[in-house]
Length: 243
Ligand SMILES: NC(=O)c1ccc[n+]([C@@H]2O[C@H](COP(=O)([O-])OP(=O)(O)OC[C@H]3O[C@@H](n4cnc5c(N)ncnc54)[C@H](OP(=O)(O)O)[C@@H]3O)[C@@H](O)[C@H]2O)c1
Image 1 (cartoon, rainbow, N blue to C red):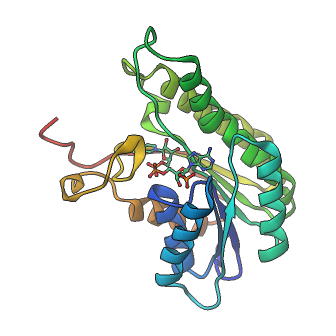
Image 2: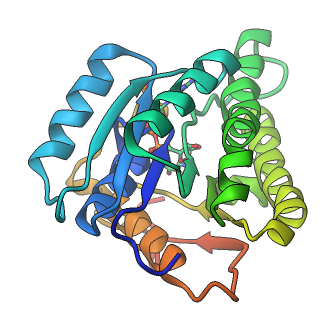
Image 3: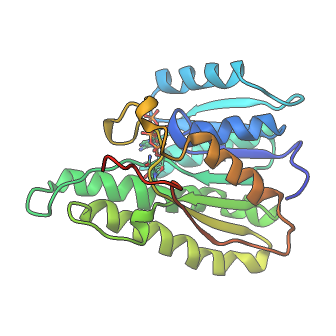
């Protein structure tokens, strides 16, 4: 995917944080973008922010309420995106959350919410777009985490979900690349977002910023069709000295 104009993208969890940063970067390059979130209010607020940013040419913005844990809501959102924008060339499975607790304190609800959102949500996102991507030599990117390759205490649910996302995306890449579909897992370290009830502030200056993820996505989709960086670990250059 080298010519970005007139391409269409679908970003799950595009209402804030990394997903919003990726949507902003795509619109700047002339790619039309559908974003999803769980509520009318979050989606409406995000589409306003996107509309106020830089948009090249006549790239369109479409806000859709869809929960990645709900297959039929994802299938409806995919259909609306294709009907409104046209064939979807690029899908970013980004929506996710984090619950952190030692295993003896981890509730069943938190476990299921983590796995259903972070792992099954990525499976549903690919499932509803697989045929469209296979028909258009599309690109699928999942946002895993460094927690998808490094485990830590208190991370049982999150590590399980992100190790799962890494493995799922790499295996599915081996299934779909022979159909001309590219797939990449991006595994970031600390990013300045609203993740885990955080509010971004100046104190996050050392972290990766959401626009850095936008930049990586543009670089990936601009690469020559013959080359595929299938897994990317992205770290803050200088870790927080206070930690
Ligand atoms: N921040 C980090 O340090 C970091 C590091 C590595 C990986 N990540 C990963 O990056 C991804 C994005 O996180 P973020 O840091 O940008 O967090 P964030 O600022 O909290 O944004 C999370 C996004 O996911 C959406 N979302 C959550 N549950 C959803 C669901 N069930 N269905 C649809 N959308 C849902 C939220 O939308 P609504 O609230 O509008 O529903 C929001 O747009 C996650 O997969 C996370 O695990 C983050």
